[in-house]
Image 1 (cartoon, rainbow, N blue to C red):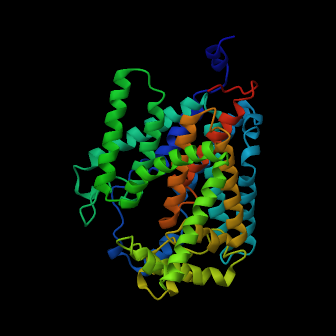
Image 2 (tube, rainbow, N blue to C red):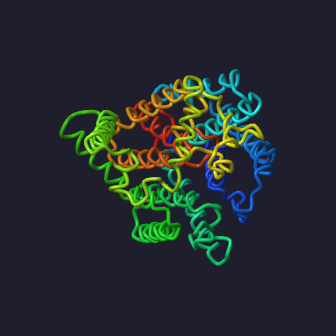
Amino acid sequence: MTEATARAKVPLAWLPAFLWLVILLRVAEMLPPDLSPVDFTDLQKGAFAVSTATSDIANQLFWLTIAGLVTLVILLQGPERLLRLLPPLSILPVFLAFCLISAAWATHPDISFRRTLLLIIGVYCAAGATAYCRSEDEILRVAYLAFAITLVANLASMAFPFSFDYRGLLRGVSGDKNFLGVIATTGLFIGAMWRTRLPGSFSRAMNAAYLAAWIGVLILSGNKTAAALVVAAPAAAWLILLATRETRLKMPVILALGGALAACLLLIVTVVLDMTVAEALGTILPDASFTGRDEIWAFSVDQWQTRWLLGFGYGSFWGVGFDAPNLQASPAFIHLLTQSHNGYLDLALTVGAAGLTLMLAFLWQVLLAIDRLRVSDRAFFLFAVSLLIFLLVHNVTESSLARGLAMPWIITVALCFMTARRLASRDPEEPSGG
């Protein structure tokens, strides 16, 4: 029996790819596009506190519908296929269960429970759609299509005034230039990976135009962090690949040693030169305050210390109404924030040191899984490491790690299950091929 015949007998074989496309377009804010970006200078604190604490029924119904369709796919094609992918990602369900349990001690248990359910639904939808696509190439092909549609929409939006902010920076239909930078960088990595699958000169020429257009969008967005990481992340991935060959150490160990070395160098500089961390960073960075983020981080650390072990409960710190802790912060601009602009700090705030430890353990598990593909699939290894480095570093200045339905988090989950599929495909019983 041929592969085409086998696929034809799978009920609704096309549905997972379609759901994956819809999910990507939704998290990229293409369904619907954001044509009226928020101007924080016009927001009133009271209205903002109410709006951020209120549930979005339409959004919940959308994701419940997608989750229902994913469940249909799982029932038709068998849950064992998804279960086979869980062993190399086993800490993820433990982390999600911890987030759900955190509603028991959350300061706002109803909000915490609701937001945790959306987190779980987002992971479930991304995992189910990518696990049941007909092949790993189909996952990439659909992602490439989704980001091509997003690219065209953002290019078309440049004809209208709403696509630029007050500084003249492009925000397109995403509503925010920083988010657009993240979309552009992710689109570039996916496009570069898909290029390795393209056989013909015409397809490669179209792909080159796609990559060039995203580079242009990234430059126009003015997102310096994303622009730097689109070069630095692949370069780091290549260096890691070389280092693993020379040292025979596993990739996660090399990353950990690199991070520890950087921290030690920063500590030595601050002690020897009697400087603060901000002063030391100021010698090599044009803005050591990271555009005022240092004040947000200081506030978040102070709040975390009051509930350092278990946190305030998942989703139970920012945007929880008139008694939200950030409404008491002395820098007034913190009143209108919904994140710490640091994903690790936000996890520490909401699920404490215990929850953050679980997330770090999960990321370590993912890195170990990716490292197992270093020799057998170098192209995917470089793609996965580059994308993961970008997403993890992105969380130093923005917050998307385990953040509900945030696009970088959904991409992270999909990358994890793509890795698990590639590991499972070494087993001849794997039905998906790829």
